[in-house]
Structures are given as C-alpha cells and as structure tokens.
Image (tube, rainbow, N blue to C red; front, side, top):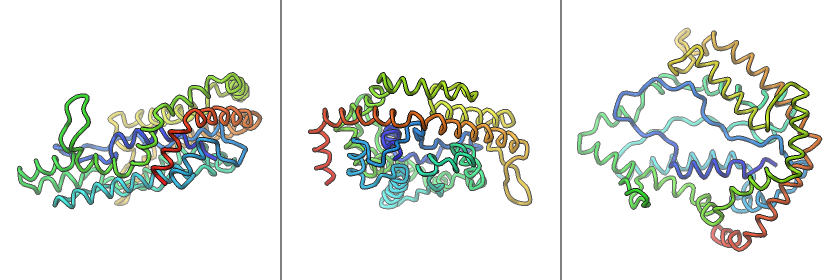
Length: 330
C-alpha cells in the first residue's frame, strides 16, 4: 500500500492555501511558466510487502473511505473548484477554472517493475503529458481576466471582495474568507479535522527516520545504490534530482521560463530542441527507478517493521483524539 501519510502534509497545505485555483490578475496574462506542476510523491523505497494497512493508514482509510489517497486528493481539488464556481455564481459572477489533467500514476504502477522499466518514476512522462494536453492559447488568455474586463468598477470591487473576502488583521482568522476560502474549508473539512485533532502527526516521519533499524536499512539501500552509480540519501532525492534536471534542461533553451512548445501545422508541439534532452533524462530516470526497486527489495520488510512500530505507537498515544475524529466523521 502506498504510504498515505506521505501526502497528508501536501493535502493539509493545499487545504490551507485554498483551492489552488489562480484568480484573475489585474494585468495582462503573462507567458506560462515551464516549471512542471508538482506531482504527489510516493515513498517507493518503503513500499510495504505486507498487504495489511499500517496502523495510522488504517485510521485514514476509515476516515476518508478510501485507500487511494492520490485520487481522493484529486477529487477534493475538483470539489473545491466546483464549490468556488457555485459560490461566485450565487453572488452573480462567473468564475472559470481550467480543465484538470487526470490523476498521476497509481501506487500499483509506481511500485511495478514494468512501469519503472518504461517510465521510471513517471516524472518525465507526466511532464510530456502535461505539455501535450496543455491548451497554450487558453493559457495565454486568462478567461477570468477577460470576464473582469466586462464589469463596471463597482462590480469589479464586489467581484474581488466576493472571491477573496476581507483580509484579516495579522494573527487573526479571516471572518470573511470569501468564496475561495470557504470553498477550501468546506472541501477539505475532514482533512482540517484530522490536522486539528492530531497536530503532532508530522512527528511520525522524524521518529521513523531516526529509528536505528530504519537508519541501518537505509544505509544498506544507499550502499546498494552507490554500487550501481547513484549517490542519493533516499528515494525522494532521486525524484527531486530528476525534476531539477528537467527544469534546468528546459531552461537552458528557454531561459525566459516559457513553455517549450512551438507552433507546427496549426498546433503546438514539443520543441524538437528539447526532445533529446528529455529522452536522455528519462533514460536516467528509468535506470535509477529500477535500481531503487532492486535495492529496496532486500530491506523492504525492515522498513515496514519500523513504520508499523512507529505508527502503532502514535495511534496508541493519540487514541482518544483518533476516537473523537472517527466520531466526527462517522
């Protein structure tokens, strides 16, 4: 099972930062950035060989009603967007969000050798998909900006007040979070309850990562990776390096941050100058992902043992808060 807690912090941040939908700017829309959207990370190196859910994972599954955390986050983002649209419509305004890309690779794919040998961690492949499915003309034309230009000055003021609410004084909670804030609060209510009742959940990662048995297993993993020519402290460092190299490769040709697409036959395609750079980087990504799986296999059961021990300790220490959370969502 994919580590549900890996994405918990990401979801909590997403909820805290509202819907993640960019509002209309007061100026002309600029050329879109070439930086790829952030994908949900998976701790592939600690994929558990045991089919039974980990202790806190089991709590989250019961709370959320699913073990597909990435799909759940994707659905929540869509729900927040729709709530924002409905809220603005109730006030007499339009609000447009772009068509979302489909969810990224599933846990089964990310931990599959066949997936790794074809797509590595799926980073370059996801970037290509994003480029292929991006409507560059739509990105250049912010439809919300165009809509705001049709409003009167008074309507524009009311539009942004409705969208963003009233900015609170420093250190205070917004009394009127606007449609953007209220949409996020409603869509991410369960996640906010979880974080509110278990604010110390982030301590699990530190306790796990400093456990002697975990450190010993990670050291063996690293030695194995070094033998294969990869000097990384952990699997996530590989993913981060691939993303960094990808952005640097694109920016070496597009230093102004533009999306690496060129017009060809009336449509936009990946710039041929960028294609070989991505091909070379994907070959690196694939070999690194396969090495990661090979080096993880001998120590996976030890990673799981520590993960279970740490999560069980957290659940035992926070049983009353967990029972309260289950009562709230039950």
